[in-house]
Image 1 (cartoon, rainbow, N blue to C red):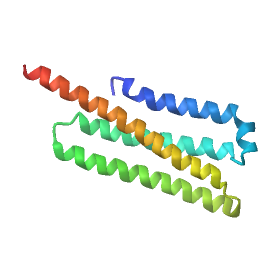
Image 2 (spheres, rainbow, N blue to C red):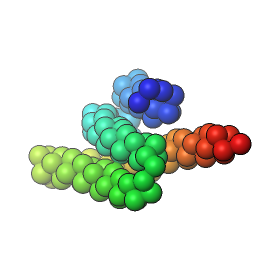
Image 3 (tube, rainbow, N blue to C red):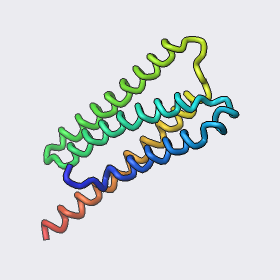
Image 4 (tube, rainbow, N blue to C red):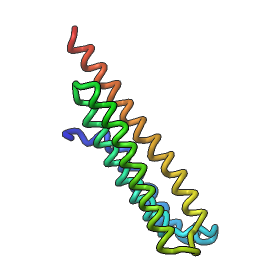
Length: 137
């Protein structure tokens, strides 16, 4: 991608959350939340969302409408399975010591990352539509 602006909200969210998890370590521990689980979950969510965003963004720039439908389903499946595998690995490694509050927060972060991804894609789609209308005139 030539323009890094669509990535900015996603990157900003990742940096902000990691900064909070690192600086608020004592606060989170007092609440019974493992900050390392949050940092790992945030990293997995960022990578999965960035990959999904890249695939979706690539399809938006394509002229083939079938490509966009395939890539949206594909990016959802990739994101879902990456997150499910990461959660499964975490649960299998720590077994009975699973930090449930951190997992619940990570589920909330999934929603936040999804919202940021969709909002960024909508801006790109709107921009593409404006560019195509301007090109037709």
